[in-house]
Image (cartoon, rainbow, N blue to C red):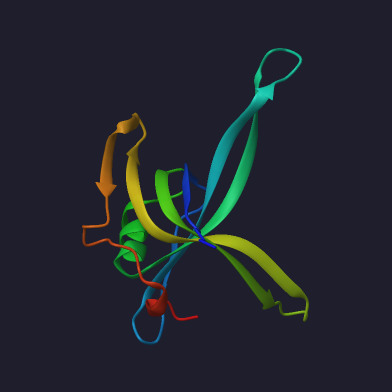
Length: 135
């Protein structure tokens, strides 16, 4: 049976990217995005929206670029894969969440996607391969 794990999202950063480096020098940026999805209209005829908050992790040059050029509120288009992560918190409680591991992204102009600068598979910002990620 074939498998596919690919996700495309467009939204705005909910916080400034947090850039850190592993002891070996691998750049890792964590940030969140909010994605609004129209889900109908309320009794007054106003559009109702569902807001999803998604955590994203980027590696290598992409992490550095996102940390340099994006801030809270910046629009972004991302392509990545969904990952389920589990860990134990400081109180010994088991925690888990879904997050997106970034493969590619696009700068989105606040005036619309027609002015987007594409960061594609052939550019120097190409996504990391699974064996390059330290987990």
